[in-house]
Length: 287
Image 1 (cartoon, rainbow, N blue to C red):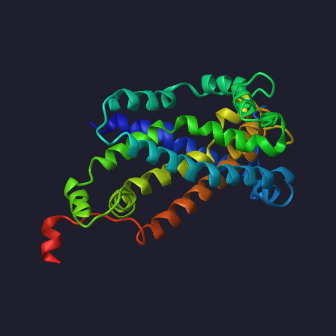
Image 2 (image 1 turned 180 degrees about the horizontal axis):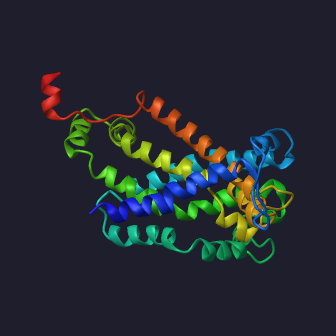
Image 3 (image 1 turned 90 degrees about the vertical axis):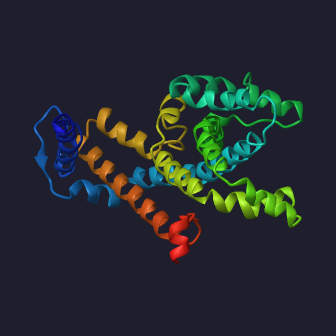
Protein backbone atom coordinates (compact mmCIF):
# COMPACT_ATOMS: atom_id res chain seq x y z
CA UNK A 1 0.00 0.00 0.00
CA UNK A 2 2.88 2.34 0.74
CA UNK A 3 4.79 1.56 -2.45
CA UNK A 4 3.31 4.41 -4.56
CA UNK A 5 4.06 6.91 -1.83
CA UNK A 6 7.63 5.62 -1.44
CA UNK A 7 8.22 5.78 -5.20
CA UNK A 8 6.77 9.29 -5.34
CA UNK A 9 8.82 10.45 -2.36
CA UNK A 10 12.12 9.20 -3.80
CA UNK A 11 11.49 10.41 -7.36
CA UNK A 12 9.69 13.73 -6.71
CA UNK A 13 11.08 14.88 -3.35
CA UNK A 14 14.25 13.21 -2.12
CA UNK A 15 15.76 12.77 -5.59
CA UNK A 16 15.41 16.46 -6.59
CA UNK A 17 16.71 17.52 -3.16
CA UNK A 18 19.86 15.41 -3.51
CA UNK A 19 20.32 16.64 -7.09
CA UNK A 20 19.98 20.21 -5.84
CA UNK A 21 22.71 19.61 -3.26
CA UNK A 22 25.02 18.32 -5.97
CA UNK A 23 24.26 21.16 -8.41
CA UNK A 24 24.85 23.75 -5.66
CA UNK A 25 28.47 22.57 -5.69
CA UNK A 26 28.83 22.96 -9.45
CA UNK A 27 28.99 25.52 -12.21
CA UNK A 28 25.99 24.44 -14.28
CA UNK A 29 24.47 26.43 -17.12
CA UNK A 30 22.15 23.68 -18.48
CA UNK A 31 23.77 23.98 -21.90
CA UNK A 32 27.05 22.52 -20.63
CA UNK A 33 27.65 19.57 -18.29
CA UNK A 34 27.98 20.60 -14.61
CA UNK A 35 31.53 21.35 -13.46
CA UNK A 36 32.35 20.70 -9.79
CA UNK A 37 33.50 23.90 -8.03
CA UNK A 38 33.06 22.94 -4.38
CA UNK A 39 31.78 25.76 -2.17
CA UNK A 40 32.57 28.48 -4.71
CA UNK A 41 28.89 29.35 -5.28
CA UNK A 42 28.47 30.05 -1.56
CA UNK A 43 31.69 32.12 -1.48
CA UNK A 44 30.48 34.23 -4.39
CA UNK A 45 27.07 34.63 -2.71
CA UNK A 46 28.40 35.96 0.58
CA UNK A 47 31.50 37.87 -0.56
CA UNK A 48 31.24 38.85 -4.23
CA UNK A 49 27.58 39.23 -5.13
CA UNK A 50 26.52 42.85 -4.43
CA UNK A 51 22.86 42.07 -5.05
CA UNK A 52 22.62 39.20 -2.57
CA UNK A 53 22.36 41.36 0.55
CA UNK A 54 19.97 43.73 -1.22
CA UNK A 55 17.77 40.73 -1.92
CA UNK A 56 18.07 39.60 1.70
CA UNK A 57 17.20 43.09 2.98
CA UNK A 58 14.16 43.37 0.70
CA UNK A 59 12.87 39.99 1.85
CA UNK A 60 13.41 40.77 5.54
CA UNK A 61 11.73 44.17 5.10
CA UNK A 62 8.70 42.49 3.56
CA UNK A 63 8.57 39.80 6.26
CA UNK A 64 8.88 42.23 9.19
CA UNK A 65 5.98 44.34 7.89
CA UNK A 66 3.76 41.70 6.30
CA UNK A 67 3.67 39.07 9.05
CA UNK A 68 2.51 41.21 12.03
CA UNK A 69 0.20 43.42 9.95
CA UNK A 70 -1.55 40.49 8.26
CA UNK A 71 -1.93 38.62 11.56
CA UNK A 72 -3.36 41.62 13.41
CA UNK A 73 -5.77 42.39 10.57
CA UNK A 74 -6.84 38.73 10.18
CA UNK A 75 -7.36 38.33 13.94
CA UNK A 76 -9.35 41.57 14.14
CA UNK A 77 -11.64 40.52 11.29
CA UNK A 78 -12.02 37.03 12.80
CA UNK A 79 -13.03 38.48 16.19
CA UNK A 80 -15.56 40.81 14.56
CA UNK A 81 -17.02 37.91 12.56
CA UNK A 82 -17.29 35.70 15.64
CA UNK A 83 -19.82 37.81 17.53
CA UNK A 84 -22.93 35.93 16.38
CA UNK A 85 -24.24 38.84 14.31
CA UNK A 86 -26.70 38.36 11.38
CA UNK A 87 -25.08 37.70 8.01
CA UNK A 88 -21.76 36.53 9.43
CA UNK A 89 -21.50 33.54 7.11
CA UNK A 90 -21.88 35.79 4.07
CA UNK A 91 -19.23 38.19 5.40
CA UNK A 92 -16.86 35.31 6.16
CA UNK A 93 -17.21 34.11 2.58
CA UNK A 94 -16.63 37.62 1.24
CA UNK A 95 -13.46 38.05 3.29
CA UNK A 96 -12.17 34.60 2.37
CA UNK A 97 -12.85 34.79 -1.38
CA UNK A 98 -9.83 37.02 -2.28
CA UNK A 99 -7.41 34.47 -0.82
CA UNK A 100 -8.40 31.85 -3.43
CA UNK A 101 -8.05 34.15 -6.44
CA UNK A 102 -5.04 33.52 -8.68
CA UNK A 103 -1.96 35.47 -7.65
CA UNK A 104 -1.44 36.69 -11.21
CA UNK A 105 -5.02 38.00 -11.45
CA UNK A 106 -4.66 39.78 -8.11
CA UNK A 107 -1.37 41.32 -9.22
CA UNK A 108 -2.95 42.64 -12.42
CA UNK A 109 -5.81 44.13 -10.42
CA UNK A 110 -3.42 45.89 -8.00
CA UNK A 111 -1.34 47.19 -10.88
CA UNK A 112 -4.38 49.26 -11.78
CA UNK A 113 -5.16 50.17 -8.17
CA UNK A 114 -1.62 51.52 -7.70
CA UNK A 115 -1.60 53.49 -10.95
CA UNK A 116 -0.41 56.97 -9.86
CA UNK A 117 -2.88 58.80 -12.11
CA UNK A 118 -5.95 56.60 -12.54
CA UNK A 119 -5.59 54.09 -9.71
CA UNK A 120 -8.28 53.86 -7.05
CA UNK A 121 -5.77 54.12 -4.18
CA UNK A 122 -4.56 57.59 -5.15
CA UNK A 123 -8.08 58.68 -6.08
CA UNK A 124 -9.28 57.81 -2.56
CA UNK A 125 -6.28 59.56 -1.01
CA UNK A 126 -7.12 62.61 -3.15
CA UNK A 127 -10.60 62.73 -1.62
CA UNK A 128 -9.02 63.49 1.77
CA UNK A 129 -6.48 65.93 0.36
CA UNK A 130 -3.46 63.61 0.24
CA UNK A 131 -1.24 63.53 -2.81
CA UNK A 132 -0.54 59.83 -3.34
CA UNK A 133 2.95 58.61 -4.29
CA UNK A 134 3.80 56.91 -7.55
CA UNK A 135 3.88 53.62 -5.61
CA UNK A 136 5.47 50.90 -7.76
CA UNK A 137 7.62 53.39 -9.66
CA UNK A 138 9.21 54.82 -6.50
CA UNK A 139 11.92 52.72 -4.75
CA UNK A 140 10.80 54.17 -1.41
CA UNK A 141 7.17 53.13 -1.87
CA UNK A 142 7.39 49.94 -3.92
CA UNK A 143 7.92 47.59 -0.97
CA UNK A 144 5.22 49.23 1.22
CA UNK A 145 2.89 48.96 -1.77
CA UNK A 146 3.45 45.20 -2.03
CA UNK A 147 2.99 44.84 1.73
CA UNK A 148 -0.29 46.76 1.48
CA UNK A 149 -1.36 44.55 -1.41
CA UNK A 150 -0.56 41.40 0.59
CA UNK A 151 -3.35 42.31 3.06
CA UNK A 152 -5.70 41.24 0.27
CA UNK A 153 -5.03 37.58 1.11
CA UNK A 154 -5.70 37.51 4.85
CA UNK A 155 -8.74 35.27 4.34
CA UNK A 156 -6.78 32.07 4.93
CA UNK A 157 -5.40 33.30 8.26
CA UNK A 158 -8.83 34.64 9.20
CA UNK A 159 -10.44 31.21 8.76
CA UNK A 160 -7.80 29.58 10.97
CA UNK A 161 -8.27 32.29 13.63
CA UNK A 162 -12.04 31.72 13.45
CA UNK A 163 -11.51 28.01 14.15
CA UNK A 164 -9.34 28.92 17.14
CA UNK A 165 -11.87 31.45 18.45
CA UNK A 166 -14.69 28.93 18.32
CA UNK A 167 -12.68 26.63 20.57
CA UNK A 168 -12.59 29.17 23.41
CA UNK A 169 -15.02 28.00 26.16
CA UNK A 170 -17.92 30.40 26.71
CA UNK A 171 -17.60 29.76 30.46
CA UNK A 172 -14.36 31.74 30.42
CA UNK A 173 -16.16 34.80 29.01
CA UNK A 174 -19.00 34.40 31.51
CA UNK A 175 -16.54 34.22 34.39
CA UNK A 176 -14.79 37.34 33.08
CA UNK A 177 -18.14 39.18 32.85
CA UNK A 178 -18.91 38.26 36.46
CA UNK A 179 -15.59 39.87 37.39
CA UNK A 180 -16.59 43.02 35.51
CA UNK A 181 -14.24 42.60 32.56
CA UNK A 182 -14.74 44.97 29.63
CA UNK A 183 -14.75 43.89 25.97
CA UNK A 184 -11.08 44.75 25.65
CA UNK A 185 -10.17 42.89 28.85
CA UNK A 186 -11.94 39.78 27.59
CA UNK A 187 -9.96 39.98 24.34
CA UNK A 188 -6.67 40.58 26.11
CA UNK A 189 -6.94 38.19 29.06
CA UNK A 190 -9.22 35.44 27.71
CA UNK A 191 -9.29 35.31 23.92
CA UNK A 192 -5.65 35.97 23.04
CA UNK A 193 -4.10 33.62 25.67
CA UNK A 194 -6.42 30.76 24.71
CA UNK A 195 -5.74 31.04 20.99
CA UNK A 196 -1.95 31.33 21.27
CA UNK A 197 -1.52 27.91 19.56
CA UNK A 198 -3.47 29.30 16.60
CA UNK A 199 -1.40 32.50 16.63
CA UNK A 200 1.75 30.38 16.76
CA UNK A 201 0.66 28.33 13.74
CA UNK A 202 -0.20 31.42 11.70
CA UNK A 203 3.09 33.02 12.71
CA UNK A 204 5.16 30.10 11.46
CA UNK A 205 3.23 29.78 8.21
CA UNK A 206 3.32 33.57 7.71
CA UNK A 207 7.10 33.77 8.09
CA UNK A 208 7.66 30.84 5.74
CA UNK A 209 5.29 32.34 3.16
CA UNK A 210 6.86 35.79 3.42
CA UNK A 211 10.32 34.47 2.68
CA UNK A 212 8.92 32.87 -0.47
CA UNK A 213 7.08 35.91 -1.85
CA UNK A 214 7.38 35.83 -5.64
CA UNK A 215 4.32 36.29 -7.85
CA UNK A 216 3.43 39.89 -6.98
CA UNK A 217 7.00 41.14 -7.47
CA UNK A 218 7.47 39.12 -10.66
CA UNK A 219 4.23 40.30 -12.29
CA UNK A 220 4.04 43.89 -11.01
CA UNK A 221 7.62 45.14 -10.84
CA UNK A 222 9.95 42.37 -12.02
CA UNK A 223 12.21 43.32 -9.11
CA UNK A 224 12.31 47.06 -9.82
CA UNK A 225 12.61 49.92 -9.51
CA UNK A 226 16.35 49.85 -8.75
CA UNK A 227 16.06 46.30 -7.32
CA UNK A 228 13.80 47.60 -4.54
CA UNK A 229 11.39 44.66 -4.91
CA UNK A 230 13.91 42.03 -5.92
CA UNK A 231 12.99 39.43 -3.32
CA UNK A 232 14.89 36.25 -2.55
CA UNK A 233 12.85 33.77 -4.59
CA UNK A 234 12.60 36.16 -7.53
CA UNK A 235 16.39 36.49 -7.52
CA UNK A 236 16.67 32.70 -7.31
CA UNK A 237 14.32 32.39 -10.30
CA UNK A 238 16.30 34.95 -12.31
CA UNK A 239 19.58 33.20 -11.53
CA UNK A 240 18.18 29.88 -12.74
CA UNK A 241 16.03 30.79 -15.73
CA UNK A 242 17.29 34.19 -16.87
CA UNK A 243 21.04 33.88 -16.36
CA UNK A 244 21.08 30.03 -16.49
CA UNK A 245 23.22 29.83 -13.37
CA UNK A 246 21.59 26.65 -12.07
CA UNK A 247 24.38 25.84 -9.65
CA UNK A 248 24.20 29.30 -8.08
CA UNK A 249 20.39 29.10 -7.93
CA UNK A 250 20.61 25.77 -6.08
CA UNK A 251 23.03 27.33 -3.60
CA UNK A 252 20.59 30.22 -3.09
CA UNK A 253 17.79 27.72 -2.49
CA UNK A 254 19.70 25.83 0.18
CA UNK A 255 20.70 29.02 2.00
CA UNK A 256 17.03 30.07 1.97
CA UNK A 257 16.11 26.66 3.37
CA UNK A 258 18.51 27.10 6.29
CA UNK A 259 17.34 30.68 6.91
CA UNK A 260 13.71 29.56 7.13
CA UNK A 261 14.66 26.58 9.28
CA UNK A 262 16.60 28.85 11.66
CA UNK A 263 13.64 31.24 12.03
CA UNK A 264 11.28 28.30 12.57
CA UNK A 265 13.51 26.75 15.24
CA UNK A 266 13.77 30.09 17.05
CA UNK A 267 9.99 30.38 17.03
CA UNK A 268 9.60 26.87 18.43
CA UNK A 269 12.27 27.53 21.06
CA UNK A 270 10.59 30.74 22.26
CA UNK A 271 7.03 29.41 21.99
CA UNK A 272 7.25 27.79 25.42
CA UNK A 273 7.24 31.29 26.97
CA UNK A 274 4.02 32.54 25.38
CA UNK A 275 2.03 29.68 23.80
CA UNK A 276 -0.59 28.16 26.11
CA UNK A 277 -1.66 24.57 25.56
CA UNK A 278 -4.69 23.45 27.55
CA UNK A 279 -3.77 20.42 29.65
CA UNK A 280 -6.12 17.38 29.37
CA UNK A 281 -8.25 16.86 32.45
CA UNK A 282 -6.64 13.49 33.24
CA UNK A 283 -3.14 14.99 33.17
CA UNK A 284 -4.30 18.02 35.14
CA UNK A 285 -5.63 15.74 37.90
CA UNK A 286 -2.39 13.75 37.90
CA UNK A 287 -0.40 16.98 38.18
